[in-house]
Image (cartoon, rainbow, N blue to C red; front, side, top):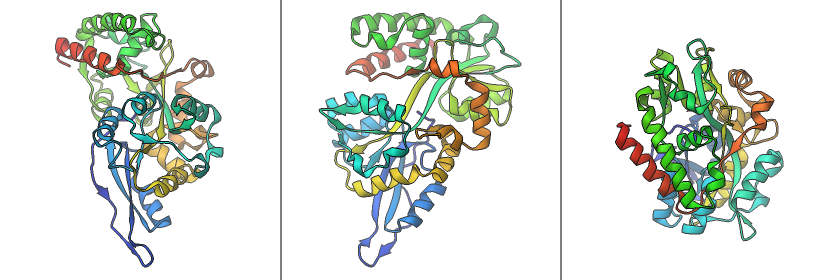
Length: 357
């Protein structure tokens, strides 16, 4: 779940091979920063018969694009682990993976098992893990030393000095701060709607505390570094990048638990380059390429020893943010049942209308 910039048609120069004619194209649908140019060049040097074309997107857009085409137009997608099961049941936009073609031995068992559990339908596995991270809080500890929970963004002590993004993460975090478990309510949508109504009231009341609602990592970073805000809801990777520039700015796992996502590899139902897709998956799981990828994304690879493969500055930021107790308290995003995203979307529109967010 990273900040993204929409770029369509980032295509390396097309090469010819004597045996195959025009090079095969691997059309990758992924998050911003998940296809750094350095890795694309390395991949194309290793596989000169494959060109990489990248479309940067996010979860909602990935599903919308694949739904609109019945799973055509792309050869490899990277939705988060909680966005696959329901989308596949509703729209049939992915194809089962051939795990024998993926080097799953290098993957972290806990992340591999979690993704397989979330994405197995009728015995077929539809995704494997790539990178993982959390959503929580960040604060400038010299200006906001007491920030510890989602509700602290609405603390009058920080009036006009906090920020958040009006997406489903802040709905879930606010629900946990209210002492509720939103994931436990997914089985009773009437109960969940009541919770969303209460969350909306809380966030609308919080309006006066918010300097601005951030849209992407760049504007959030600018506000934090300039001192316009002292605390915000954030992706951990954004906080890690800022820690390298100002060690007073740290990621804070909320006291109710940081919300944890796993971005995956999934093959669209009508992809035309499965072999190239499997090559890319295995390529980016190689240790030297993991470090390049994590340096770009700021996230941790879902492989054994993934944290040790982070660039040095990212390792320092992780160590400054997480204790073992925080890790034990992680809240993994649950599979989203049909209808829930529509409910959350309407709630967010209600909040935006009331706050101008």
